[in-house]
Image 1 (cartoon, rainbow, N blue to C red):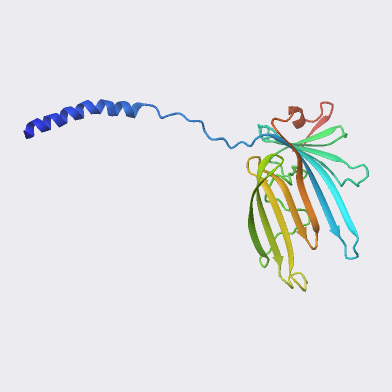
Image 2: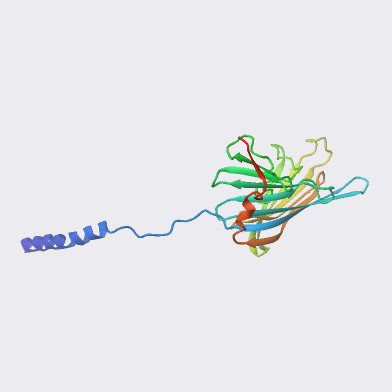
Length: 242
């Protein structure tokens, strides 16, 4: 009886082994790798700054900027030097191209475009996207210091220009005496970020010292921008700068 059982077990193992080997040599199932690319878009961003002086006088500035990103990761920023009240303001265009690893910039109407390698220390400082990064700091807003009291609040989600945005509010308190102030100075910053586009849809900063600054995406088109936007006009002279 024992010998018969041992023989049966050996036969079962001999039959099952090829099947096990067959399963082992089969190729693993294929699957689509996850992509980290961000969707292309074109956006118009309007920034306003309002200040109230001690005598009750008010100052208002407004600036409009356009941004675009294509499926290759190239980004284009067009912004005005100065504000809407500036006489004959210059319009600067900057393009960051990770494909060719270059920065390209030009002043509209100048007839000259400058191309620099991305690794160059002389890369144009005008290449910036103040509304694309959640960590961007508003102009005039100093970085927090060790003694400042920082509190953060999650504001949930809301829809802005047809996309879902996640909100966060940061409350910064400068204790009395840190800047010669007799009372604490409280400032707030609220941001609404589209994780899908990696784009800040709305940013509002308020401070007793700096007034109120708001940057908002007022127009948004999702989809591939015109490829010509990422190149200087065809009649421009190209200057290579190392």
